[in-house]
Amino acid sequence: MAYNIKLEIFEGPFDLLLFLIRKHEVDIYDIPIHEITEQFLEYLELMKILDLEIAGEFIEMVAMLMNIKARMLLPKPVGMTDEEYEDPRTELVERLIEYKKFKEAAAEISEFESNRRKLFSRKSFEKYFVTKEISTEEYLNDVSLFDLLLALKKALDNMPKITEHQVTRIDVTLEQQTEFILNQFISNSAILFSDLIIKLKEKIVIIVTFMAMLDLINKKKLTVKQSENFDDIRIKLIK
Image (cartoon, rainbow, N blue to C red):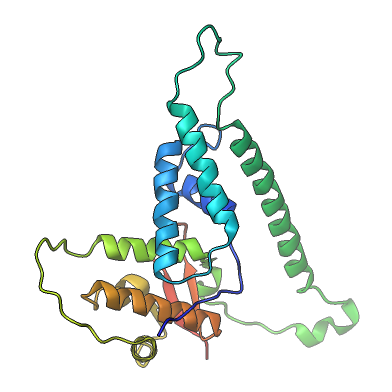
């Protein structure tokens, strides 16, 4: 039986590109196309393994990256100066910068709206004058789909490399791993993704557990946060 996971927050190919650029700390005006293309395809493969819905824009972006990669391998036309030569990455960079500006503007508007919701008129101010201790976890950053995929990629990469093995059937279901995840919160208010995954030894079990976690996030039963970019992911049960 196949489990198709759909998340409410859709993140497109430009989000993935910006994520990879930030992850590798490269200059957006000097993108290492070969490295970024390979990483982009790896993340796309992870999304296919997890049966996440991949929109046509991702395939279009792969085609664009491969086209740029091929053009960059070609020698510069004879007699053409550096000033006359147009970098094959120019169009992609311009589109990325424009997308980044709109994304940042949308984030600023969202933050402004969020701050305005905390303001009340003077006449009813006393009703909301309640002191509340804010926990450290409330200051953690939100986690994107690609942060989650990065955590999964690290877990799979860190598994022992087996050159010879005997093929055996491993019976694991989404329901079993959902129960496994929820059981971790019996004695803990929050757990780290790395601590959750380290208990699992088989690749297929890790993948099904990750899908169960995505399903619980989608059902608003779990929340995931990070203290900073690319840090370990903290998972918390929503009561």
